[in-house]
Length: 328
Image (tube, rainbow, N blue to C red; front, side, top):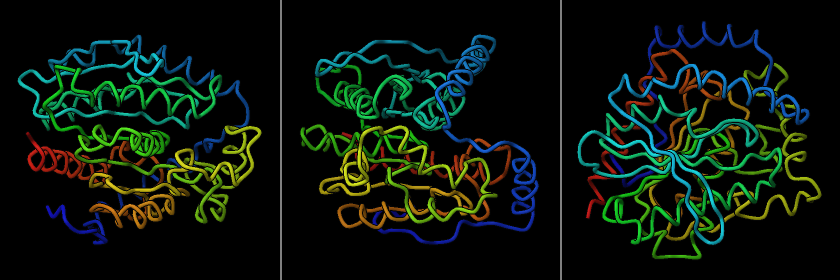
């Protein structure tokens, strides 16, 4: 795997894999598109999520793993994290930031995703249980993720002090991961410890990129036409000019001294341009590999398809390569 050049090579595919994706897309077409219309619906979804997690709390044990919940306090900001460790000595550590449109989700929702990463890459995973935007401004969510990153990257964190660190973020978590890296520029010595960033279909312009604004109404999973309105609802009282200020909109940040990155986007995702535009700016400072998944909507790594399996396997290989390249 070449970590020194920006990749624009089409994702390898075949007729069978594409047929599988198309069949699953037909099922997705029957589902309502996610749109932040009010604060009641996300709270209901969050309650259902927590109930399902109580019923499935032993899933990690099936993998021979367990999770520790710990509350950190750095810079006056306290934030819970969920730590999953490998059975043997960790070769690296991942700071995981979950998705959920900033309004739903928690660190536990990524257990299956993170357990696979722990086992395949022999890493520890620290997943941030940041506050949600229903009661906290998005700037507060960034503060939570920054607090966790500062704790993990500081040499006082003895357990992980000598390990390579990879940031992983999905969707809204991709936004928070990129924003966290920009905020870390205040502490150059901490930013230098980050070995790489793995970002899945994130949101990097809170005013809406071209693909968001022009998304057709039949967009899968995400409601394209309503996303700009939703972004405004999540940033009340701000003008578009203020919404574009980094780190709130990472796309417009300074990427000097950033680590190498691997980014994924779906061809049918309204957020497609967010990833492509971010990669174009990021690659001026560090190697960036961008992969576009054909005919794939938002959230594709969670779908029961060969594409999802191959993307996750490729991601694990990339993490292992970054750890090998930067191990102390």
